[in-house]
Length: 188
Image (tube, rainbow, N blue to C red):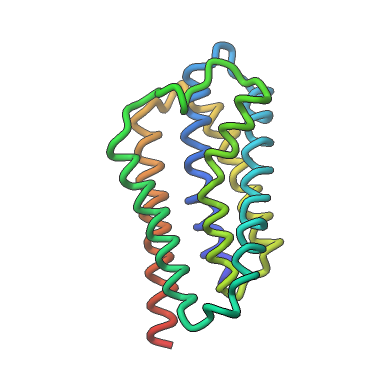
């Protein structure tokens, strides 16, 4: 898998964290650089670790399902992307699960896990692709960190409309990458 595809996956995965950061920037009183970096660290670390865990799980079964691995990668990416698209069209703005009233370690941990579950599934799908998982996970973590910091800092200005659109675009990109993987395998 090329660097551009890894970067697009990283951006797509980080858009949930970006949306939560935007919400936090809007709702947490006195939100600033310190809170943005704290949030970025939590999200970045979890976005780094989850693909590694997913890859380890997927690698343990990859030799048994090698003949259909491209279909599994496509299905996982399409499901994750479809879920993101559906949620972006369905949910309102500023719900409790998205906009914490504080940034305690407990709350940040829950948010980091919730926003990185998709990265676990992508890690499973990466077990069936020719990728360097450590550098891929590193890119995913760094992108999540940067987008979380940026999302928090500009949250008050961008508001809910941008938050929903970001999740919609992320879902569509993941679906597109899944289709690309499937087409390359079927035509190659």
